[in-house]
Image 1 (spheres, rainbow, N blue to C red):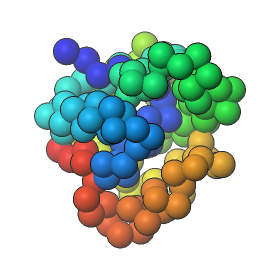
Image 2 (image 1 turned 180 degrees about the horizontal axis):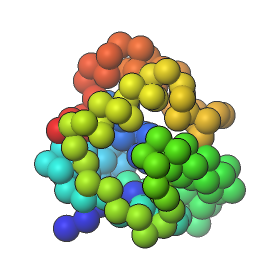
Image 3 (image 1 turned 90 degrees about the horizontal axis):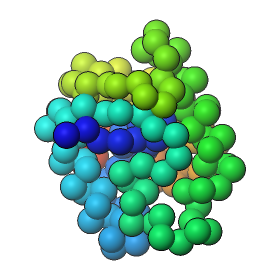
Length: 140
């Protein structure tokens, strides 16, 4: 199978520590974190993805908001620069320990965090990254 992720969730997965919007969201994210940790392939998508699933029944969910779409655009550009290849919808990425290490290093330095501007989770992500990603659920 393939995990469908919107581009900014490539960044979110780096610091996911079991916190989220609702219990159903967290339960779903835990399952996705396990799949990513097992090395399941990622397909980048436009709009709501597998992580968003529990929230999409609400037409006013932030998953549909313009700020989130802009976050995706910024994340796609940052990841494309880092990887040296396009990171738009349809691109596929195979998770590996080397990739995760590279993403986390550049996330911690702020190099790929332009998409995180204004995100309500930024303080938590700062703390997780600053603490060496202790407790992060995605690991390969």
